[in-house]
Length: 538
Image (tube, rainbow, N blue to C red; front, top):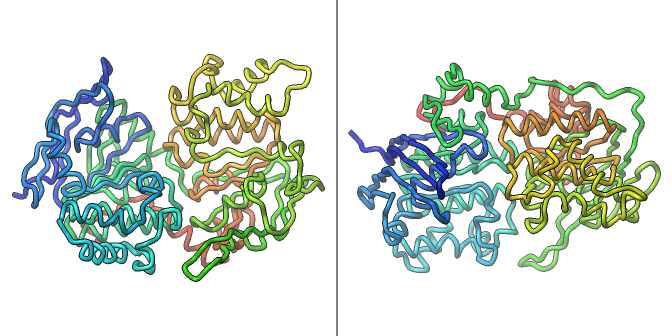
């Protein structure tokens, strides 16, 4: 019988006196896929980092066994291995693809150099042979014009293309095991589907074993043969993907499945027919100058976009990466300067506004950890816009901060804490409190729940709905998860390459889309029932 690509037994991780991971056992066969799922803090990534020898936390202690069986390297015990042994394993026997390719790729090096580095180190290829192999890899993962892209830098590619490059780097030395840690979390549905299909195809071509870590049960059910469900550092259930999804045994597994957003699961309350228009955007145009090999050119990020937002309603904006969704948000908040068009808030031009008008539009970003200053307490972060605008006039700033924390359902004793002391969901609540500090009429939510696991995500969405009802807020809701857009939105704007493809009430967009591109977006959503990789190879 073929030995498992990786066998882990009684894996335990402790930091100081705290046990983080307790007694994890699993194995993965060559060509198979193990999905590891659970909420933030469940120990998913910690388990795999410890098992593969990548854990580098001060005071961390790892026990148990983790045995890699690789055709090139033979049998290697990873726990307790020397730094030299791990250097020979990482990239050569085990490839890694992490969540955010923009932070995994070196912004100062070309894509080609980052690809050839491992080829020259592990496979001892010459500079010319490594270049040829790197271009072949870029082509194999679907990068257009691979020879031209070889000399490009990461910032010149879209998010989906950067993730494809990360996959090419991870597979460059034909490792027997690929670790994919939330590789599609920040991607739109069509790009996510393409990445899943790409990994599946490459896996079947090379016989690579895959460990796929995710908080999304929908994605896990599509990629995994077997699923390990983790909670509080322990494995609560381990079964085949089909059995887990169709007949979960553990209550926590049932909670995860129930919390997963699904099309048709919930629909928003129809907007009041008498709701007045609060924001009118007309022929909005944004262009960015770029330098190309042929000289200076422009990227038309937003091309003649027009829409209206009504008081107390939510307008969802969807589309692939690079469609112009976030550029619209940045233009309305003054983060980028549009080249044309108007945006009026109750008759006043937002694009030429002073601070007094701009404060009526607030924004909540995707990653609350990077949008909050780590050197400031969360209370100071919420107080900052109040201090800048010298508010509240004649009132107590500390009382206002207390009110804001109450509004987003955070304990007041959190005010003195720092961002790293809070969970992802708690940090996003702080970001929402900061956005509401100046009592805006419009809140722009730019992928504001994309980085959260499904159970926390559902609670944040419920908070947003409650705040909209209580404060009569109008939302611009930008997201790549169409099930969440359906749940939150009254109207939906579908964008492609900077232009509006379709604009209609949410029930029409999701119930009877008219445009082919909208239908493609809906078709790319992972189906609810699992698909076996072995039964359905690409």
